[in-house]
Length: 122
Image 1 (tube, rainbow, N blue to C red):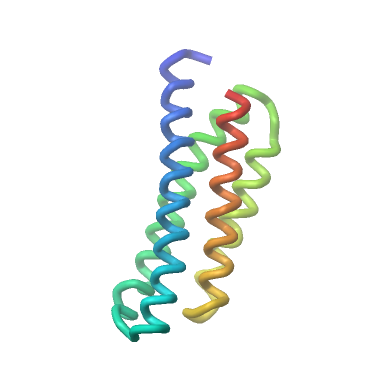
Image 2 (image 1 turned 90 degrees about the horizontal axis):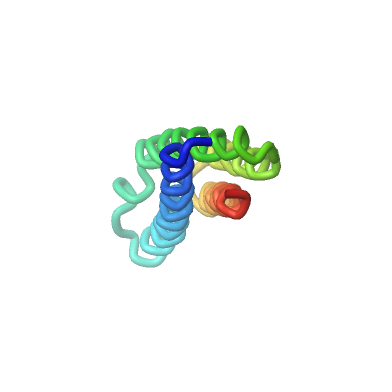
């Protein structure tokens, strides 16, 4: 694999881990702030934010983990990240609240693990 492609993949994997962490913080903080303080429900728990996050996570994972899988020929990172994206997608279909937060946090955790596994195979 060309050095430029490998470097891009590494940066995308790191960005994927960072975005996963930010998403998890958003979900947990959003539920806590809305539940405890009753503030920001319209903005923090907006379905548009979650849809945008899922699209962004899917694009980054497809590029980074797809390139990684072609390079190292191991499907583990792809399987883990795809499972995480599935959890995140399923979270869009449950009501706002704990169920959505649990599915989303589990999903972003799995996507982050997929990116980290991909980084280890670099």
